Image (cartoon, rainbow, N blue to C red; front, top):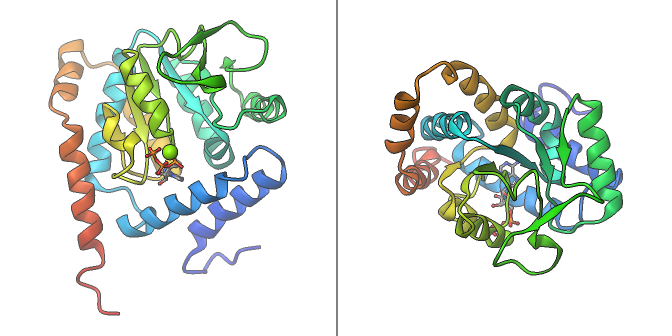
Length: 250
Ligand code: ATP
Ligand code: MG
């Protein structure tokens, strides 16, 4: 039990969720390493949603509302950390959730599907025995995407995506939105919108923003997108990282 007054309470709660999920067999061995890297960047941005992450959230929401076939992709870490909020977002958007694992095993897919369905997911794709389409530019099982999901999608939300796949998705014509605490990752640089924030904070904010913006007319939504510059937004995150602790004495 983590004491609530522990100065690193939030961070430790997330760590515990990752450890539990690992024990439950929904994570690959490397998942903890990915989480650790995320923790380090979260520390550097001050473990809160920055103003420019909020701007990216707004652009992400506009793109998802404008999409004809939006899809929310999940991996093991995202499921372990924010499955309920992922389901809420997918239901708000009426968009399917697609399970997309770097190290895919049928057992892990089945466990993740079960968790999402228990939380109320209506349409879970990326499961076994399903029609698949190929994402060009990727090799092996990672090239597979659900035909009705990412393959057909125009806009994909892919939190914690690997750089290779993000690049391939962009090359295949998808509008890629990612959530990645590392503003220097290939995924962050390649995506159309990168939300530099923790998935646990970003996903509920996207849902809120979708609810706020969904009655706006198309021109207004397109304006939000046109005014968003991902490289500039990433630069702002890097500035925040270099300034967060600059004024603090050790
Ligand atoms: P890339 O392949 O894009 O160059 P990478 O190989 O450095 O990135 P991966 O291991 O592919 O990184 O993906 C993990 C990424 O997810 C890391 O950039 C890490 O900062 C980020 N990350 C980990 N946990 C979280 C989290 N809870 N919220 C947001 N981002 C996270
Ligand atoms: Mg990678």
